[in-house]
Image 1 (tube, rainbow, N blue to C red):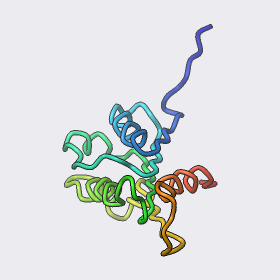
Image 2 (cartoon, helix red, strand yellow):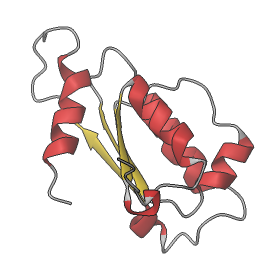
Image 3 (cartoon, helix red, strand yellow):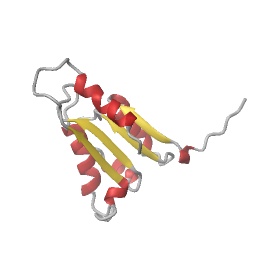
Image 4 (tube, rainbow, N blue to C red):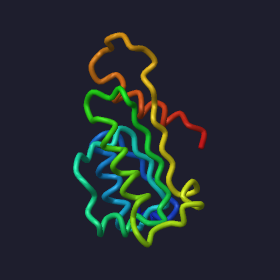
Length: 128
C-alpha cells in the first residue's frame, strides 16, 4: 500500500540529539515547523542552515539545569535565528520563534539527566 503524506502539514519534534536532527531536517523546508527539547548541537549553525530556517516556526524547550546538554546549546540556536541579517522582522519573531527556558524546581542535587528529560516532557504536554 502506498501512503501519501503531505510533509507541509507535518511538524517535527526532536529530543536531545533528535532535536539536532529535527533542525537539520527542517532546513529542507519540507516540514511545517519544529519543536526541540534539550537541543544538543554544541557549535554554531552554518549560515546556509540559518538562511534555510528563516520563516519556519521553531519552538525550543530547554532546562537551565540540564546536565547533558547545556542550555547554551538552545540559547545559541535561538540567538543565531534572531540575529540573522536580512532575517525576520523583530516584531513578527514571536509568531515564528518561541523559546521556553525551564527553571530547575529545586537547588537540591537531582538524579543525573532529570532536567534533560524534563524539557521533553514539558514540550510534549504543551497544548500549543
